[in-house]
Image (tube, rainbow, N blue to C red; front, top):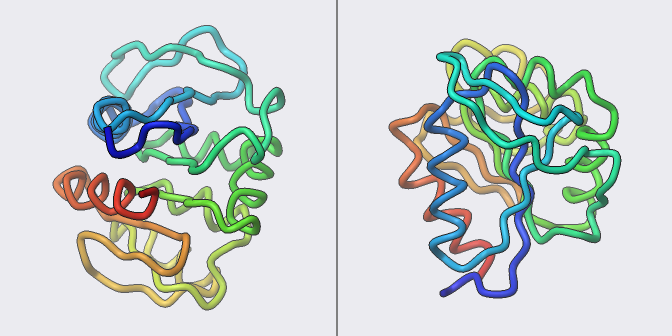
Length: 171
């Protein structure tokens, strides 16, 4: 239970990528963290293939003080998440407070909109590489990149390295 006592926010929104939500959800719980699903306020969200995920709590009802880390999964959900001011504020506040902010695949869009990438090494799915670079990041094509409290990965195949990295950073 290497993460006993740690509190992790896991973002969700419609069109989430199944593996990028459920793999970190269960891996963080397995390590002993308290995982809180944070969304935009719906009772339930559906993945790209229709798999339901719990609504959890609305981003407006939590703050960075409630968590040690925030994990943003990919899919097309980040394009919706990046339009939610409360989700962006939570990411920005966690980042500026030195807490772990982790994003995989298209979740880099949330980091772009939160304005936290300037001068940071990061990776993402190749489809949004230009967005990440234009936001000021130094793009690195690796399965896992950690720059301070920022953790990024590219695609579902990178999930083992992504979750290992989050756990190591939270220890």
